[in-house]
Every structure is written in structure tokens, then in C-alpha cells.
Image (cartoon, rainbow, N blue to C red; front, side, top):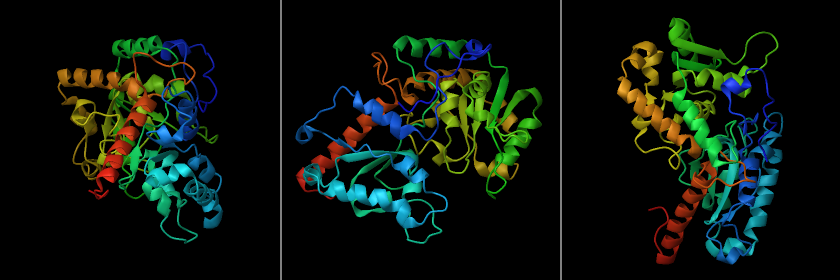
Length: 371
């Protein structure tokens, strides 16, 4: 189902994680997860003529991931071109010329938006193809194109029952948080604009106020941040979790922190506030703190002092909002439907149906689709 192997019980697992629903889920597995969720979607129909929207179960990111390094553009584009050619010949396409079609890309949008045939340019041109301009693309990080929408990265938690969700929420409300803030990650010395080095330095100089989980330590190059136990253990004991940009604007860590009831701290508006519009509240101050990147880069502020100034009632209100968001950012087990909660998949599908509905009404009324 795309979840990866179950988290094996360890001596201290129960003190950090709940008993069921935890997996070592890869951050790029969204396409497989979403497809399996769709197979069990309660409103799925075999009659395409009556469908409100058409899901295209193409594993765009997994296809591209095979050829990102050391392959020419024609190899990277081969399956994408074959896909849109096949779609164009289908009777479903003619209904709205693909404007009711949507697909999921388990990577950031820019991986699918190569603009030229230069061999050195990154990614594929899946979403730069004329047919794709009509379709809706759901990715873990959206671009500025109007048919791009960001949906949550997969987390490690995939519950099968409502009680597993509500129990975890109660546990996060009761969690003791001795650290004011934490950071899980690694520096990005190859990126000139990265503030990670300064964040790590400030964390290390903040004493017991900050907990640093260094993803890479030692010659083995083991990524400690790929172990759910390591990540959740730090985040559920922290009040704030720092979420600077990595290789792109967004991070899976944002959703790990929300899962652990830790208030995310962002440094760029495209890291979340302009991304997950279907899943996060419109008022970002309800669930997060924003510190401008430039203030950190130019050392105009101390992160610890900024976070210490947040009034305690505001902290408690933000934490409660974060904990309420947990169901909206997880992908529940598709074999068992939640009854009281809607998960990330449910909100994504509702968003697609609303968008396709608006486009359909414009088509019927003969209006400009760019309005």
C-alpha cells in the first residue's frame, strides 16, 4: 500500500509511539498510497460518463526517479509522452479535454516541469506538455502554476480506526515538552542561501532550550531522520519545531512535527503558507510561527528569544490547533475507513472535485477558464 515496513517493536517504542499504525514510510511514496486509497474510495464509479472527475493512476515520480541522474531527456520523458498520447485518444478525454482529469506526483512539482530539451536541465516535462496543462496535478510541493496543488507528504502514521487517531491526539496533548524548540536535519553547505548552518549554530548555542537531531552523523552515513522513533521522540518533547527550506521550499518534517503536536516555525512563505491550501487553515498564525529568512541570515534575531516572547496562551492555542490538524495530514489505512475523521486523501479529493466543478461550470457557460 506504499506504507513501507511496519515499525518493529523495540524496548522504548511504546513510550514514544502508540501500539498500532506506524510504518517506515518513504517520503516519495505518495503515488502508491493515493492509488490504494482511491481503489477503496466510497464514491468510485466504473461508469466514466457519470464521473465528476477522472483519476489517472500514473506513478510519475517513481517513473522519473529511475532516470533523474545520468539519463537523457528523451528517456526521462518517454513514459510521460506515451501517457498523454494514450489519454488523448480515450473517450473520457473528449468530455472536457482533460480538465476533469487529475494525477498525483510524489515529488515536488518542478521535477515535472522541465522547460527545454537541454540535457543538463533537471526533471521531466510531464506537466509542460500541452495536454497536461488541462489536468490537475497534486504534488508534495506545488509550483506557481494554477493547475498545481500541494497535498501533505506521507507521514509515518497510518491508522485504521478512529480510536487510534483520537488516542494519539490525547497523548500529544498530555506530552511533556522540555525543549523550547528543536531541529531535525542536516546543513546544506552547497546552497549559498541556506540558513540551516545558522539554525544549527543557534540551536547548539541555546543549551537545553534546543534539541538538535542531526540526520547524518559519523562515517556510516546512516540517516537517523528516516527512523520514525528518532524523529517523533524529539518532536513530541518540543514546543516548536524549526522548518527551514531544504533542497526545495517544503519538508516532510513539517508534517512529522504536526503529527507530534509540535508547532512548526517557518522561514519562507512557500514552505507551507502558500502551499497546502486545502489542508491548512487560511490564517497561518493559528498553527505556526513565521520568522523571515533574512532576519536569521543577517543575524538580526535570536530564534530562542523570539520564541520565548510568544505568550503562553498563544502557545497553548497554537498547539491545540496543530493537534486538531493531525487527521487532515495523515493517510489512513485504505483497508479500514475512518468514520469520524477525514484524512489527507479525503481533503485532497474534495479539493479536486470542487476545482473540477468550477471549471465545468465555466465551460458550460462559455467563460474564459483563465478568469
